[in-house]
Image 1 (cartoon, rainbow, N blue to C red):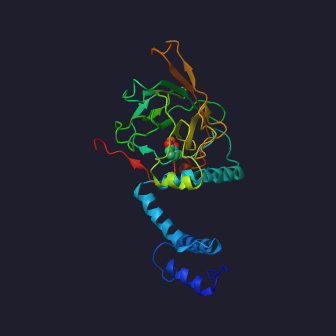
Image 2: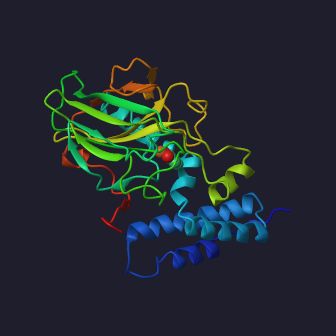
Image 3: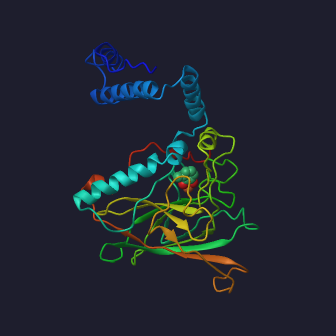
Length: 310
Ligand code: MBD
Ligand code: FE
């Protein structure tokens, strides 16, 4: 028989005490959230008859998840980060703040402080020259009327041919495949880089361990991340997910969306001054007007910052 006690006055009073409602110190906001976590955790334990062994397995899992720095990866894989996008989309719809390039998740692998270039740059350090396909990526930043936004910052990052990101992959050079490009007078940005491979969760890590239990893979299609910002415009966090990838519509992090598929074209005509096969990808972004100064900023999510020379 299922025993339930968490709804009783005694237990509710106990959780309120544990959440700090018996004192006037600390943060009322956090107290409210922690109380709800305690109440809902207790309900899950009761309703699903979670055993003590299951509970302590979960506690150990959280320790291992944090120890491997994978909390941000798990929330992406469980679709919570995508849910935040869907929730913001619904809020925007209600507020009439619509149009332009869709947002999609940032993911856990951004590093702040990438080198800044005017108009165009090269992103790769040449270390994969023998295995990578050179990619020419370009496009414009536009407003909702299709007018160019000059001086916008296109902050972009992507994986190498192994699906790994510099900084998190210590074998890569500092800021490899990470740049900020300031758009020119026509709102244009240009990058020479390499075609990225899709990302796969570490098969030995706690995120993949959970996904295995859910019968799911931990793969993402090849993709390129973007933060796009300009004075007077709403900050945009988005990605281009590459056409032709097996995982394009089977992304473990649910980031691929209509309007965010990049049609990558492979050529071999020598036109770009590279010998052999290379790729072209054109993708333009449309920004909404910012409602206020805060709208121009990305979220305050804690992010990695490369320490120069470290
Ligand atoms: C990635 O490269 C990524 O973009 C996300 C969302 C999760 C894991 C790795
Ligand atoms: Fe990524």
